Amino acid sequence: MKNNLLLLAVFSLLINSLSVAQQSFKLPPFDQFKLPNGLTIYLMEQHEVPLINVAGIFPAGAVYDGEKSGLASLTAACLSSGTKKFTKKQIDEELDFIGASINIFSSKENSSLSSRFASKDQDKIFGMIQSVLTEPAFDKDEFEKEKKRKLTALERATESPRSVQQNYWDKLIYADHVYANPTAGTAAGVGKLTRDDLMAFYANHYIPEGSSIAIVGDFDKKKMKLLVTKLFSTWKSTGPRLPDPASATPVFPPAGKVLLVNKEDARETTLLIGGKGVKKNNPDAVALEVVNTVFGGRFTSMLNDALRVSSGLTYGAGSNFSSLKNGGSFYISTFTATKSTEPTIDMALDVLKKLHKDGLDEETLTSAKNYVKGQFPPRYETSGQLANWLNTMFWYKLEPSFINNFQKEVDDLTTAKAREIINKYYPENNLQFVLIGKSADIKKIAGKYGPVTETQIKGDKLRAF
Image 1 (cartoon, helix red, strand yellow):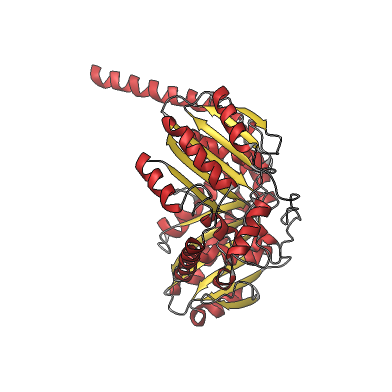
Image 2: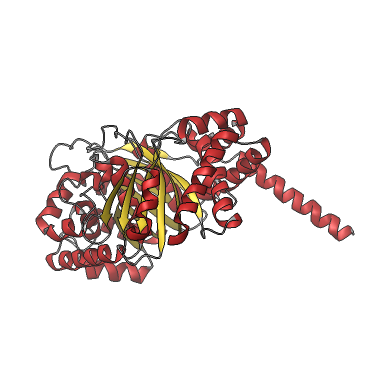
Protein backbone atom coordinates (compact mmCIF):
# COMPACT_ATOMS: atom_id res chain seq x y z
CA MET A 1 0.00 0.00 0.00
CA LYS A 2 2.81 2.41 0.92
CA ASN A 3 4.54 1.67 -2.38
CA ASN A 4 1.33 2.37 -4.28
CA LEU A 5 0.86 5.67 -2.46
CA LEU A 6 4.47 6.61 -3.20
CA LEU A 7 4.05 5.80 -6.89
CA LEU A 8 0.85 7.84 -6.99
CA ALA A 9 2.59 10.79 -5.37
CA VAL A 10 5.49 10.60 -7.84
CA PHE A 11 3.08 10.34 -10.77
CA SER A 12 1.12 13.37 -9.55
CA LEU A 13 4.34 15.33 -9.17
CA LEU A 14 5.38 14.47 -12.73
CA ILE A 15 2.00 15.52 -14.11
CA ASN A 16 2.13 18.81 -12.21
CA SER A 17 5.68 19.44 -13.40
CA LEU A 18 4.65 18.78 -17.00
CA SER A 19 1.72 21.14 -16.66
CA VAL A 20 3.96 23.89 -15.28
CA ALA A 21 6.46 23.32 -18.11
CA GLN A 22 3.70 23.58 -20.69
CA GLN A 23 2.35 26.77 -19.19
CA SER A 24 5.82 28.37 -19.00
CA PHE A 25 7.07 27.29 -22.44
CA LYS A 26 8.66 30.23 -24.24
CA LEU A 27 10.69 30.63 -27.40
CA PRO A 28 14.38 30.52 -26.40
CA PRO A 29 16.30 33.80 -26.80
CA PHE A 30 17.82 34.51 -30.19
CA ASP A 31 19.65 37.24 -32.08
CA GLN A 32 18.47 38.67 -35.39
CA PHE A 33 20.38 40.91 -37.77
CA LYS A 34 20.44 41.79 -41.45
CA LEU A 35 23.48 41.88 -43.70
CA PRO A 36 23.99 44.87 -46.04
CA ASN A 37 22.87 42.71 -48.99
CA GLY A 38 19.44 42.20 -47.36
CA LEU A 39 19.92 38.66 -45.99
CA THR A 40 18.32 38.18 -42.56
CA ILE A 41 20.21 36.00 -40.08
CA TYR A 42 18.90 34.36 -36.90
CA LEU A 43 21.23 32.91 -34.26
CA MET A 44 20.01 30.79 -31.34
CA GLU A 45 22.45 29.04 -29.01
CA GLN A 46 21.48 25.55 -27.77
CA HIS A 47 24.35 23.79 -26.00
CA GLU A 48 22.68 20.57 -24.82
CA VAL A 49 23.92 18.55 -27.82
CA PRO A 50 27.10 19.24 -29.90
CA LEU A 51 25.12 19.73 -33.10
CA ILE A 52 24.15 22.64 -35.31
CA ASN A 53 21.05 22.94 -37.48
CA VAL A 54 20.81 25.44 -40.31
CA ALA A 55 17.59 26.36 -42.09
CA GLY A 56 17.25 28.77 -44.99
CA ILE A 57 14.19 30.13 -46.78
CA PHE A 58 14.14 31.84 -50.18
CA PRO A 59 11.51 33.45 -52.46
CA ALA A 60 11.72 30.56 -54.93
CA GLY A 61 8.56 28.48 -54.69
CA ALA A 62 6.12 27.14 -57.26
CA VAL A 63 4.20 30.42 -57.30
CA TYR A 64 7.11 31.76 -59.38
CA ASP A 65 6.95 29.00 -62.01
CA GLY A 66 5.00 31.07 -64.51
CA GLU A 67 4.36 28.99 -67.62
CA LYS A 68 7.23 26.63 -66.79
CA SER A 69 5.54 24.19 -64.43
CA GLY A 70 7.94 22.45 -62.06
CA LEU A 71 10.75 24.98 -62.52
CA ALA A 72 11.10 25.87 -58.84
CA SER A 73 11.11 22.22 -57.80
CA LEU A 74 13.70 21.11 -60.33
CA THR A 75 15.93 24.11 -59.59
CA ALA A 76 15.92 23.31 -55.87
CA ALA A 77 16.73 19.67 -56.56
CA CYS A 78 19.69 20.60 -58.77
CA LEU A 79 21.25 23.24 -56.52
CA SER A 80 23.36 20.70 -54.65
CA SER A 81 24.36 18.78 -57.78
CA GLY A 82 27.73 20.49 -57.89
CA THR A 83 29.20 23.96 -57.45
CA LYS A 84 32.20 25.87 -58.72
CA LYS A 85 34.21 24.47 -55.78
CA PHE A 86 32.71 21.01 -55.27
CA THR A 87 31.43 18.29 -57.56
CA LYS A 88 28.28 16.44 -56.54
CA LYS A 89 30.41 13.40 -55.75
CA GLN A 90 32.65 15.44 -53.47
CA ILE A 91 29.66 16.91 -51.64
CA ASP A 92 27.96 13.55 -51.20
CA GLU A 93 31.11 11.72 -50.07
CA GLU A 94 32.15 14.42 -47.61
CA LEU A 95 28.70 14.69 -46.05
CA ASP A 96 28.44 10.91 -45.78
CA PHE A 97 31.89 10.61 -44.23
CA ILE A 98 31.19 13.06 -41.38
CA GLY A 99 27.50 12.20 -40.95
CA ALA A 100 26.20 15.60 -42.05
CA SER A 101 23.41 16.63 -44.41
CA ILE A 102 22.49 19.46 -46.76
CA ASN A 103 19.05 19.33 -48.39
CA ILE A 104 17.18 21.81 -50.56
CA PHE A 105 13.54 21.48 -51.53
CA SER A 106 10.77 23.63 -52.94
CA SER A 107 7.24 24.23 -51.69
CA LYS A 108 4.27 26.29 -52.83
CA GLU A 109 5.58 29.72 -51.81
CA ASN A 110 9.29 29.29 -51.17
CA SER A 111 12.29 27.02 -51.27
CA SER A 112 14.13 25.86 -48.17
CA LEU A 113 17.53 24.62 -47.14
CA SER A 114 18.12 22.35 -44.18
CA SER A 115 21.44 21.16 -42.83
CA ARG A 116 22.52 19.25 -39.74
CA PHE A 117 26.08 18.56 -38.62
CA ALA A 118 28.41 18.24 -35.66
CA SER A 119 29.62 21.50 -34.14
CA LYS A 120 33.25 20.56 -34.80
CA ASP A 121 32.54 20.47 -38.56
CA GLN A 122 30.92 23.88 -38.79
CA ASP A 123 33.65 25.62 -40.82
CA LYS A 124 33.67 22.85 -43.41
CA ILE A 125 29.88 22.58 -43.76
CA PHE A 126 29.25 26.31 -43.80
CA GLY A 127 31.74 26.55 -46.65
CA MET A 128 29.70 23.97 -48.57
CA ILE A 129 26.41 25.71 -47.80
CA GLN A 130 27.81 29.00 -48.99
CA SER A 131 29.03 27.41 -52.21
CA VAL A 132 25.73 25.62 -52.86
CA LEU A 133 23.70 28.80 -52.36
CA THR A 134 25.93 31.29 -54.13
CA GLU A 135 27.74 29.41 -56.90
CA PRO A 136 25.84 26.33 -58.12
CA ALA A 137 27.20 24.83 -61.34
CA PHE A 138 24.01 23.12 -62.60
CA ASP A 139 26.09 20.33 -64.08
CA LYS A 140 24.58 19.19 -67.40
CA ASP A 141 24.73 15.48 -66.69
CA GLU A 142 23.34 15.86 -63.18
CA PHE A 143 20.56 18.10 -64.52
CA GLU A 144 19.46 15.41 -66.97
CA LYS A 145 19.54 12.74 -64.26
CA GLU A 146 17.45 14.83 -61.87
CA LYS A 147 15.00 15.78 -64.59
CA LYS A 148 14.50 12.10 -65.41
CA ARG A 149 13.95 11.31 -61.72
CA LYS A 150 11.33 14.08 -61.48
CA LEU A 151 9.45 12.81 -64.53
CA THR A 152 9.42 9.28 -63.16
CA ALA A 153 8.13 10.50 -59.79
CA LEU A 154 5.36 12.52 -61.46
CA GLU A 155 4.26 9.52 -63.47
CA ARG A 156 4.22 7.27 -60.41
CA ALA A 157 2.25 9.82 -58.42
CA THR A 158 -0.78 9.32 -60.66
CA GLU A 159 -1.04 5.76 -59.36
CA SER A 160 -1.81 7.06 -55.88
CA PRO A 161 -4.78 9.48 -55.63
CA ARG A 162 -3.64 10.75 -52.23
CA SER A 163 -0.34 11.81 -53.82
CA VAL A 164 -2.04 14.17 -56.26
CA GLN A 165 -5.30 15.13 -54.56
CA GLN A 166 -3.83 18.40 -53.23
CA ASN A 167 -2.96 19.51 -56.77
CA TYR A 168 -6.54 19.04 -57.95
CA TRP A 169 -7.90 20.70 -54.83
CA ASP A 170 -5.67 23.75 -55.23
CA LYS A 171 -6.65 24.11 -58.88
CA LEU A 172 -10.34 23.90 -58.00
CA ILE A 173 -10.07 26.38 -55.12
CA TYR A 174 -7.55 28.87 -56.51
CA ALA A 175 -8.36 28.64 -60.25
CA ASP A 176 -6.04 31.11 -62.04
CA HIS A 177 -4.22 32.31 -58.92
CA VAL A 178 -0.62 31.12 -58.64
CA TYR A 179 -1.51 29.14 -55.51
CA ALA A 180 -2.98 26.65 -57.99
CA ASN A 181 0.51 25.87 -59.31
CA PRO A 182 1.43 22.26 -58.38
CA THR A 183 4.57 22.21 -56.25
CA ALA A 184 6.26 19.42 -58.20
CA GLY A 185 4.95 20.67 -61.53
CA THR A 186 3.46 18.58 -64.32
CA ALA A 187 5.17 16.03 -66.54
CA ALA A 188 4.56 18.18 -69.63
CA GLY A 189 6.07 21.21 -67.91
CA VAL A 190 9.12 19.48 -66.45
CA GLY A 191 9.77 17.70 -69.74
CA LYS A 192 10.33 21.04 -71.47
CA LEU A 193 12.68 22.56 -68.88
CA THR A 194 16.27 23.29 -69.83
CA ARG A 195 19.42 23.93 -67.87
CA ASP A 196 19.23 27.56 -68.95
CA ASP A 197 15.74 27.80 -67.42
CA LEU A 198 17.13 26.68 -64.08
CA MET A 199 20.06 29.08 -64.21
CA ALA A 200 17.74 32.01 -64.94
CA PHE A 201 15.34 30.99 -62.15
CA TYR A 202 18.22 30.68 -59.70
CA ALA A 203 19.55 34.14 -60.62
CA ASN A 204 16.14 35.75 -60.07
CA HIS A 205 15.00 33.97 -56.91
CA TYR A 206 17.95 32.69 -54.87
CA ILE A 207 18.86 36.13 -53.68
CA PRO A 208 19.79 37.51 -50.25
CA GLU A 209 17.02 40.12 -50.19
CA GLY A 210 13.80 38.55 -48.95
CA SER A 211 15.66 35.46 -47.70
CA SER A 212 16.70 34.33 -44.25
CA ILE A 213 19.06 31.81 -42.68
CA ALA A 214 18.48 30.52 -39.15
CA ILE A 215 21.27 28.80 -37.21
CA VAL A 216 20.44 26.94 -34.00
CA GLY A 217 22.73 24.77 -31.91
CA ASP A 218 26.04 24.47 -30.12
CA PHE A 219 28.10 27.51 -31.11
CA ASP A 220 29.32 30.86 -29.83
CA LYS A 221 27.11 33.66 -31.15
CA LYS A 222 29.89 36.20 -31.55
CA LYS A 223 32.08 33.82 -33.53
CA MET A 224 29.13 32.59 -35.59
CA LYS A 225 28.12 36.13 -36.49
CA LEU A 226 31.61 36.82 -37.79
CA LEU A 227 31.63 33.57 -39.78
CA VAL A 228 28.27 33.98 -41.51
CA THR A 229 28.89 37.67 -42.17
CA LYS A 230 32.15 36.81 -43.90
CA LEU A 231 30.62 33.96 -45.90
CA PHE A 232 27.35 35.54 -47.04
CA SER A 233 28.09 39.26 -47.33
CA THR A 234 29.58 38.64 -50.79
CA TRP A 235 26.30 37.11 -52.00
CA LYS A 236 24.84 39.65 -54.38
CA SER A 237 21.53 39.89 -56.21
CA THR A 238 21.93 39.97 -59.97
CA GLY A 239 18.95 42.27 -60.45
CA PRO A 240 16.03 43.89 -58.68
CA ARG A 241 13.83 41.70 -56.53
CA LEU A 242 10.84 40.52 -58.53
CA PRO A 243 7.30 41.21 -57.25
CA ASP A 244 5.49 38.45 -55.41
CA PRO A 245 3.03 36.89 -57.90
CA ALA A 246 0.96 35.57 -54.99
CA SER A 247 0.37 38.99 -53.43
CA ALA A 248 -3.13 39.31 -54.88
CA THR A 249 -5.80 37.85 -52.60
CA PRO A 250 -7.24 34.68 -54.15
CA VAL A 251 -10.83 34.84 -55.38
CA PHE A 252 -12.68 31.78 -54.17
CA PRO A 253 -15.46 29.99 -56.07
CA PRO A 254 -18.80 31.77 -55.47
CA ALA A 255 -20.84 28.57 -55.77
CA GLY A 256 -20.41 24.92 -54.94
CA LYS A 257 -19.05 22.55 -57.58
CA VAL A 258 -17.55 19.10 -57.98
CA LEU A 259 -14.32 18.12 -59.69
CA LEU A 260 -14.47 14.43 -60.62
CA VAL A 261 -11.06 12.96 -61.41
CA ASN A 262 -11.42 9.65 -63.23
CA LYS A 263 -9.06 6.82 -62.26
CA GLU A 264 -10.29 3.94 -64.33
CA ASP A 265 -8.88 1.16 -62.16
CA ALA A 266 -9.91 2.70 -58.82
CA ARG A 267 -11.75 0.58 -56.26
CA GLU A 268 -12.16 3.41 -53.82
CA THR A 269 -13.01 7.10 -53.84
CA THR A 270 -10.58 9.64 -52.42
CA LEU A 271 -12.30 12.88 -51.53
CA LEU A 272 -11.81 16.41 -50.27
CA ILE A 273 -14.67 18.68 -49.21
CA GLY A 274 -14.34 22.29 -48.12
CA GLY A 275 -13.80 25.86 -49.18
CA LYS A 276 -12.13 29.09 -48.17
CA GLY A 277 -9.66 28.95 -45.30
CA VAL A 278 -7.40 31.47 -43.56
CA LYS A 279 -4.01 33.13 -43.96
CA LYS A 280 -1.07 31.86 -41.94
CA ASN A 281 -0.99 34.94 -39.72
CA ASN A 282 -4.72 34.90 -38.92
CA PRO A 283 -5.23 36.27 -35.38
CA ASP A 284 -7.56 33.37 -34.54
CA ALA A 285 -5.03 30.70 -35.53
CA VAL A 286 -4.66 29.29 -32.01
CA ALA A 287 -8.40 29.11 -31.43
CA LEU A 288 -8.81 27.46 -34.82
CA GLU A 289 -6.26 24.80 -33.89
CA VAL A 290 -8.22 23.92 -30.77
CA VAL A 291 -11.57 23.79 -32.56
CA ASN A 292 -10.16 21.78 -35.44
CA THR A 293 -8.65 19.31 -33.00
CA VAL A 294 -12.22 18.49 -31.97
CA PHE A 295 -13.62 18.43 -35.49
CA GLY A 296 -10.95 16.56 -37.44
CA GLY A 297 -7.49 17.05 -35.97
CA ARG A 298 -6.98 13.94 -33.83
CA PHE A 299 -7.94 10.28 -33.73
CA THR A 300 -10.86 10.94 -31.38
CA SER A 301 -12.18 13.78 -33.55
CA MET A 302 -15.82 14.08 -34.59
CA LEU A 303 -15.01 13.13 -38.18
CA ASN A 304 -12.87 10.12 -37.40
CA ASP A 305 -15.29 8.87 -34.77
CA ALA A 306 -18.22 9.05 -37.18
CA LEU A 307 -16.58 7.81 -40.37
CA ARG A 308 -14.15 5.26 -38.98
CA VAL A 309 -14.98 4.19 -35.43
CA SER A 310 -18.79 4.19 -35.54
CA SER A 311 -19.53 3.35 -39.17
CA GLY A 312 -16.42 1.66 -40.53
CA LEU A 313 -16.74 3.60 -43.79
CA THR A 314 -13.03 4.48 -43.87
CA TYR A 315 -9.72 3.84 -42.15
CA GLY A 316 -9.34 7.52 -41.38
CA ALA A 317 -10.91 10.96 -41.75
CA GLY A 318 -9.75 14.43 -40.77
CA SER A 319 -9.85 18.12 -41.50
CA ASN A 320 -7.21 20.73 -42.11
CA PHE A 321 -6.68 24.44 -42.60
CA SER A 322 -4.00 24.72 -45.29
CA SER A 323 -2.72 28.26 -44.75
CA LEU A 324 -0.40 30.36 -46.90
CA LYS A 325 0.84 33.94 -46.80
CA ASN A 326 -2.04 35.50 -48.73
CA GLY A 327 -4.81 32.94 -48.46
CA GLY A 328 -5.71 29.41 -47.53
CA SER A 329 -8.28 26.66 -47.78
CA PHE A 330 -10.16 24.34 -45.45
CA TYR A 331 -10.96 20.75 -46.29
CA ILE A 332 -12.30 17.50 -44.94
CA SER A 333 -10.29 14.55 -46.26
CA THR A 334 -11.03 10.85 -46.33
CA PHE A 335 -11.32 7.84 -48.65
CA THR A 336 -13.72 4.94 -48.90
CA ALA A 337 -14.70 1.94 -51.01
CA THR A 338 -16.42 2.98 -54.24
CA LYS A 339 -19.76 1.53 -53.13
CA SER A 340 -19.61 3.63 -49.94
CA THR A 341 -18.94 6.96 -51.66
CA GLU A 342 -22.37 8.50 -51.12
CA PRO A 343 -22.89 7.53 -47.45
CA THR A 344 -19.35 8.67 -46.67
CA ILE A 345 -19.88 12.11 -48.20
CA ASP A 346 -23.29 12.46 -46.55
CA MET A 347 -21.92 11.51 -43.16
CA ALA A 348 -19.03 13.97 -43.46
CA LEU A 349 -21.50 16.72 -44.30
CA ASP A 350 -23.71 15.70 -41.37
CA VAL A 351 -20.75 15.98 -39.00
CA LEU A 352 -20.04 19.47 -40.34
CA LYS A 353 -23.67 20.42 -39.79
CA LYS A 354 -23.50 19.04 -36.25
CA LEU A 355 -20.44 21.19 -35.54
CA HIS A 356 -22.39 24.28 -36.61
CA LYS A 357 -25.54 23.25 -34.78
CA ASP A 358 -24.09 22.14 -31.44
CA GLY A 359 -20.76 23.91 -31.16
CA LEU A 360 -18.47 22.58 -28.42
CA ASP A 361 -19.52 21.76 -24.86
CA GLU A 362 -17.28 22.55 -21.91
CA GLU A 363 -16.04 18.98 -21.44
CA THR A 364 -15.08 18.57 -25.09
CA LEU A 365 -13.39 21.96 -25.19
CA THR A 366 -11.38 21.19 -22.05
CA SER A 367 -10.22 17.88 -23.53
CA ALA A 368 -9.12 19.61 -26.74
CA LYS A 369 -7.27 22.32 -24.81
CA ASN A 370 -5.32 19.74 -22.83
CA TYR A 371 -4.49 17.82 -25.99
CA VAL A 372 -3.28 20.91 -27.87
CA LYS A 373 -1.19 22.15 -24.95
CA GLY A 374 0.32 18.71 -24.53
CA GLN A 375 1.28 18.54 -28.21
CA PHE A 376 2.65 22.08 -28.35
CA PRO A 377 6.11 22.00 -26.67
CA PRO A 378 7.35 18.92 -28.60
CA ARG A 379 6.85 20.86 -31.84
CA TYR A 380 9.73 23.15 -30.83
CA GLU A 381 12.01 20.94 -28.76
CA THR A 382 14.80 20.22 -31.28
CA SER A 383 17.30 22.60 -32.84
CA GLY A 384 15.99 21.74 -36.30
CA GLN A 385 12.41 22.56 -35.32
CA LEU A 386 13.47 25.86 -33.79
CA ALA A 387 15.50 26.82 -36.87
CA ASN A 388 12.50 26.10 -39.10
CA TRP A 389 10.24 28.14 -36.83
CA LEU A 390 12.54 31.18 -36.99
CA ASN A 391 12.24 31.08 -40.78
CA THR A 392 8.47 30.64 -40.51
CA MET A 393 8.35 33.77 -38.38
CA PHE A 394 10.35 35.61 -41.01
CA TRP A 395 8.31 34.42 -43.99
CA TYR A 396 4.86 34.97 -42.53
CA LYS A 397 5.75 38.02 -40.43
CA LEU A 398 4.84 36.33 -37.16
CA GLU A 399 6.00 37.51 -33.75
CA PRO A 400 7.57 35.42 -30.94
CA SER A 401 4.34 36.08 -29.06
CA PHE A 402 2.69 33.41 -31.23
CA ILE A 403 4.65 30.84 -29.24
CA ASN A 404 5.09 32.75 -26.00
CA ASN A 405 1.34 33.39 -25.62
CA PHE A 406 0.14 30.12 -27.15
CA GLN A 407 -0.91 28.36 -23.95
CA LYS A 408 -2.65 31.46 -22.62
CA GLU A 409 -4.65 31.83 -25.83
CA VAL A 410 -5.64 28.18 -25.60
CA ASP A 411 -6.77 28.61 -22.00
CA ASP A 412 -8.70 31.79 -22.84
CA LEU A 413 -10.87 30.06 -25.46
CA THR A 414 -14.47 29.72 -24.28
CA THR A 415 -17.37 27.74 -25.70
CA ALA A 416 -18.94 31.03 -26.84
CA LYS A 417 -15.75 32.06 -28.66
CA ALA A 418 -15.49 28.57 -30.16
CA ARG A 419 -18.96 28.96 -31.65
CA GLU A 420 -17.90 32.30 -33.17
CA ILE A 421 -14.86 30.57 -34.67
CA ILE A 422 -17.03 27.83 -36.15
CA ASN A 423 -19.52 30.25 -37.66
CA LYS A 424 -16.79 32.48 -39.08
CA TYR A 425 -14.30 29.99 -40.51
CA TYR A 426 -15.95 26.64 -41.16
CA PRO A 427 -17.66 26.80 -44.57
CA GLU A 428 -21.22 25.53 -44.55
CA ASN A 429 -22.51 26.62 -47.95
CA ASN A 430 -21.05 26.65 -51.47
CA LEU A 431 -18.85 23.69 -50.60
CA GLN A 432 -16.28 22.45 -53.12
CA PHE A 433 -15.66 18.74 -53.79
CA VAL A 434 -12.77 16.82 -55.30
CA LEU A 435 -13.60 13.16 -55.91
CA ILE A 436 -10.95 10.82 -57.31
CA GLY A 437 -12.29 7.43 -58.34
CA LYS A 438 -13.86 5.47 -61.15
CA SER A 439 -16.07 7.99 -62.90
CA ALA A 440 -18.49 5.45 -64.35
CA ASP A 441 -19.39 4.30 -60.83
CA ILE A 442 -19.64 7.63 -59.01
CA LYS A 443 -20.56 10.31 -61.58
CA LYS A 444 -24.26 10.22 -60.74
CA ILE A 445 -23.44 10.43 -57.05
CA ALA A 446 -21.13 13.39 -57.69
CA GLY A 447 -23.96 15.28 -59.39
CA LYS A 448 -25.91 15.26 -56.13
CA TYR A 449 -23.46 17.77 -54.63
CA GLY A 450 -23.12 20.32 -57.44
CA PRO A 451 -22.24 20.87 -61.09
CA VAL A 452 -19.65 18.29 -62.14
CA THR A 453 -16.48 18.88 -64.13
CA GLU A 454 -14.63 15.73 -65.12
CA THR A 455 -10.95 15.19 -65.85
CA GLN A 456 -8.54 12.26 -66.05
CA ILE A 457 -5.81 11.39 -63.57
CA LYS A 458 -3.56 10.21 -66.39
CA GLY A 459 -1.80 12.85 -68.45
CA ASP A 460 -1.39 16.57 -67.79
CA LYS A 461 -5.01 17.56 -67.32
CA LEU A 462 -4.36 19.79 -64.32
CA ARG A 463 -4.69 23.01 -66.31
CA ALA A 464 -7.61 21.82 -68.42
CA PHE A 465 -10.58 22.44 -66.11
